Structure formats: structure tokens, C-alpha cells
View 1 (cartoon, rainbow, N blue to C red):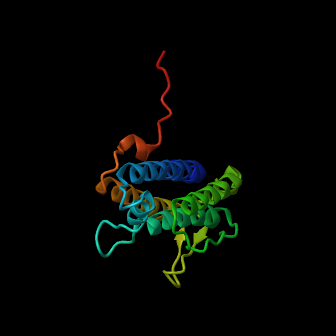
View 2 (view 1 turned 90 degrees about the vertical axis):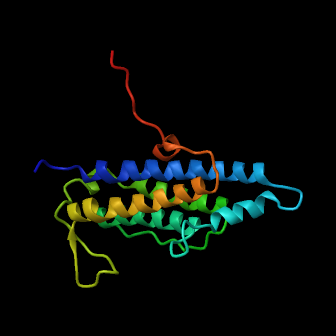
View 3 (view 1 turned 180 degrees about the horizontal axis):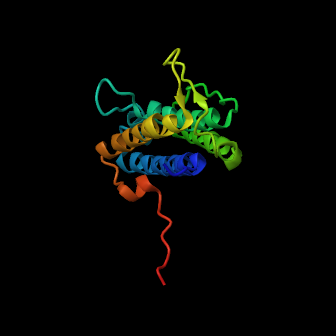
Length: 181
């Protein structure tokens, strides 16, 4: 098996996805402003979107953002051996969620490639799997990325379900396309 750069596989794409979520929240605010009426202010629409879920047994939009942030910072912390920053999960507004994303991105930016590259065999434990561990590579490929994108996709889908005019480009956040010539 050829070596994998765990930094390149995790930190840049997670950061990009979080910034795309931040951009989606701008569209959430614009959508709420567009839908407001004399009887229902934009803030009520925002709150409805923030607390909506795809189905009764899934977390609402706010929690999807919190978990996506937790997954990104947790992945960076576990692989680098750093302390995982604690966030309180108290966000109730778009502005507060944007701050959480910004704090998470700042933490990701602080982790250097050399802190993660070569950590394929590090033992990664998770509190909800007591007495068990995965290697760094297994953690990234079998859990961290899939779990992170599950919550990012669910957040995106909640907004899409509610009529926001968003598409794949909003989810992807742009591609590094280059001229062929």
C-alpha cells in the first residue's frame, strides 16, 4: 500500500467543508430575510431552520454544525497529539455557529503538517468505544472522514429540504481547477 498523507487527507478538506458550511449560513440568513412577512420576522425563519431536522430521530441543523466542528477538531487533535479544544454546544444563532466554525478553522490552521504526517499507526481511542482503539489510518479512513461528511451533508440537506437555492457548488466550496495549456 502506498503511503497516505494523513494531513492532506484530513485538515485541508475538513477546513474547506467548514468554510462551505459558513457560506451556507449566509444563504440561510438571506433566505430567512426573503421569506419574512409582517407577521413572521426573519429571525423566526432563521430559528426554524436552525432547529429543523431531516427526520424526527436525527439531530437538528444546529447540532449537525456542532458535531461537524467537533469531528474536525477532534480528528486534528487525536492525530497530532494535541489537546482537543472544548466547545460548549450552546450556540442558538447563525452568528454563534459562525463563531464556532471560525474557532474550529483557527484550530485546524494551527496544526502543522509535520504534526500529523506519519501518524498512520498511532493508537486512536474514542470515549464511546471504551477499551477499543483504531490506528490513525483506520480512524481517518473508516471513521473520521465518513462521520464528518455525514454531518456536513445532513446540515446541507436540511437547508435544501427547506427550499434554499443551494447546489453542489455550495457543498463543494469550489475546486482547484487549472488551465490545461
